[in-house]
Image (cartoon, rainbow, N blue to C red; front, side, top):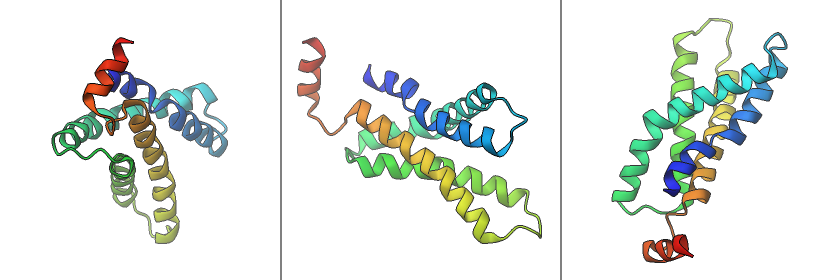
Length: 134
């Protein structure tokens, strides 16, 4: 049950920050629209990459926060880098593209870390079950 709530709640803060950043860079886009857009992007990436990754991590008993953070980073960094390279223009500098992709990847890492903080897979399952009933 905690994983379901974590799926819903984890992307909200990073999407709000990313949506605000999108609104600042594109003032014609309203703040609420940019927040909703970023939430949809984060939920889509979380559904496509995050849910299968969560099940693989659980099966392999990888319970450390860095695994969830790294997967969150790569889940956003890799598609954004592929999108940037697909729309490559000769005037783009590779350093600025990588910087932008890394910045966007940090939002994914924050989502992964928040997800880990809400699910807390490092705790003993018996202890979690007992704490859910009290």
